[in-house]
Image (cartoon, rainbow, N blue to C red; front, side):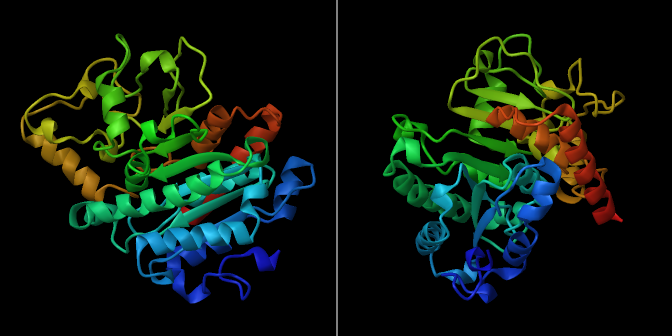
Length: 348
């Protein structure tokens, strides 16, 4: 198992080039014994690949290195492969990925490629094209190889991104380029207001649905979920699926330049349960308030509100997106409690 770890002596990627975020991502993976103790079944060791900014000179070379490492460790023999676009600093939230590795009984692989050292807001302002370029390079490398494999002998392919990672993941491919053989879907959490797919689906939501938890074209392809529920969708979910996990109280998602001069639809009634019912809209003032929350409010609210996505809500999202039905309600609740305790201990 040690030989399969990115940064090991057998790895194509030197350990010292991963950076702090990459080393943390590799080292915090649950092991097969931990997963087996929860699932009650023999589990595999989840596979993780990370390519740091210092691992290669260009986004294209880093993406190729990621693919070569995935092939080296046998990632394409697993049931599931997740392409992760990290946040601006290169961070991958363990609350997003660890629960999925449990739900998959370890039979999965994931890969992330760093594109910046800056926080997401700074990265978005100073080098917005760099994250998109890196995400697209990784998608192209992995997708081209994935489509060369027999459909019955390749993993399910999903994309994941949190915050700026969601935006750049959304920009990593053009649906018209993959329509004949698309990946299985994507989970994008805490999407910034500039995320193209999110913005279109929210603006063109089905009549009668709310701006903070919309339905879009009856939920055939794209759906929304928050910490409370998913809205009813009239149509069967197709094989290609996109799920946005978002909180109504997230300033990263619901800030918009229009907020300075126009009352936003998310302040209309009914409001999201986690939005203060006393909040009023004032020209300029409300825009400044939400902008301030966006810049300094992250990490200052309890987990499960604002921009801090809770592991238990990721569990709900992954179960919904992947249609997971292998575990009892009691097992799922046990898994949620385990990660809730981990997050509480981490905050303390």
